[in-house]
Amino acid sequence: MYGLMTKMLSHDKILLRRVRRFGAAMGVLWLAVGCASTPADLDVAEPERAVPPAALPDVPLTAELLYDILLGEIAGQRGYGDVAVEALSRAALSSKDPRLLARAGRRAARAGDHDKALEIAQLWAQVQPDHPAPAQLSGHALLAMGRTEEAYEQFADLIRHSEPEVGGAYRRIADLLARSGNTDGLLALMDRLIALHPESAEAYYSKAFLADRLKQVTVIGASIDQALMLRPDWEDAALGKFGHLADSSSPEAAETFADEYLRDHPDAPRLRTRYARFLVDRENPRDALIHFKYLADHDGENADAAFAVGLLSIQIDELRQARDYLLRNLALQEDNDQTRLYLGQVALELKDYEGAETWYREVRQSEYAFEAQMLLATVFAKRGNLDGAIAHLQTIEPVDDEQKLQLYLGQERVYRETKRLDDAKVVLDSALVELPDHPELLYARGLVAAQLNMLELHESDLRKLIARDPENAHAYNALGYTLADQTSRYDEALDLVGKALELKPGDPFIMDSMGWVQYRLGNIESAIDYLERALHSRPDAEIAAHLGEVLWVTGNQRRAKSIWKEALKKSPDNDLLLGTIRKLQQ
Image 1 (cartoon, rainbow, N blue to C red):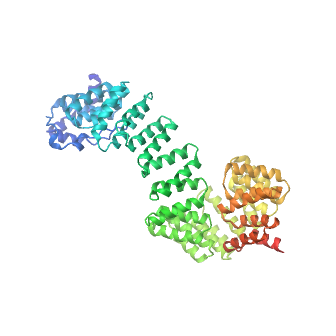
Image 2: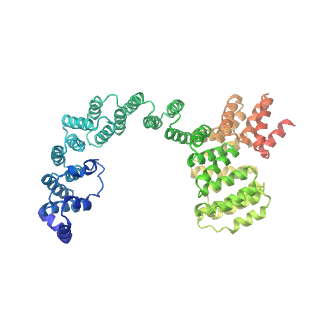
């Protein structure tokens, strides 16, 4: 071994001589080597942070001691773990300095030399009998060696050192147990340790952490429940339980728990935020909005919550509320060009075209600049300046195929929204020549073809898209809706929309399609159920048109009129809604 050490350190002798000139005491040396990070496998507190300098031993820095320290440090940095352990252990055991004992102990634990780690820990405990770290190091080593009963005594000693605040000790012990490599009997050992402080919620929560690492699902829930029983207002435990329920395929149970906990403990912002995001993922924007709005209204500096309220409000067509919260976000985050884009979208929807143009022209960040320029064309088109919109789009230079795609789609959107569907199809035909079979282009042309009553092209494009992307719920939905609306192929439509709903359960537009299919099949009750749920999730004009028609033909004309009236307030120019009303009231 010494041959290896000599070879490895031959070119470091100059460094060794230089340090000898300056190293007159351990305090000086520690400045040179004390900045190394603590290994992840054993969190041992640095003794010099816990013990007054006067209590540290005055150890002379001999040449031999300095050599062993430098050898250990350099060997460790170069991957020679056994050399590092041997050298640092000699330095620690000879000097009995707690700082070196901590360093050597960590190195031995990292290298898996548990006999050496235990030897160091036992000496360290003699040097600093009131310090908790030696017991932690000993427990870790004994557990790895299979000496469970002795490990228990060391962990119990660690807990006693931590009294009366034992939560941190239990967390460290649970982490050590989880990474010990031995899984047998760990939960039983944790139970024995918990018995020392059965009133500690942190102890039970630490057991839940250990159970999670050991994949003991039932133990996780029971342990967190015990922690919450002892500390009902502990948000960490509430977050843990919510996450456990959500991750164990119990989303309904997770929702029930979060609702009940937040009712009793409304001041739990982290759980409320986590729950709101969960509801977004579950495609429940209305309930998510309630919680984000609570967060934004109770913390005027919460820019993220204000932004979330803005986006969710757009989704459910609460446009003025969206504008108010997006403006609040921008006041807190002045450089947020993404917010400016959404403010422009809101202004467009509210027909404030001057305001929309202002927001889009204020966008400066490069990642949003292209999108802002694209949306400016929409503003021109909305103002009736179709030629200006197309001319503006043609001035934009795409830097890649993705931007080229967006330019094509932008031109198509301008034509479609101004009801020039033939021109929209021409643009998409050209785009598909340059970007053959691109999914977004196939989908866009399929929708335009349906509006032009070109059923064969519509079906061809969407079936080609489904073949390329069998998980594309929107393609199944669009084709299924068209077959139900424009043909008598209702059973086929039912299969397609059913597949879409399987891929995206809860999507309001797919539920709308399913309601329409059920109506065409004559299943009126089922149709009304789907359409009402869709409208509740998203108060969209076309969903309102469909629900109103089903209600009208079944004799509930008063409710149909009420639904249409509400929809007209937000979408007075929607073609499907206006056409449905004219058709049924003529």
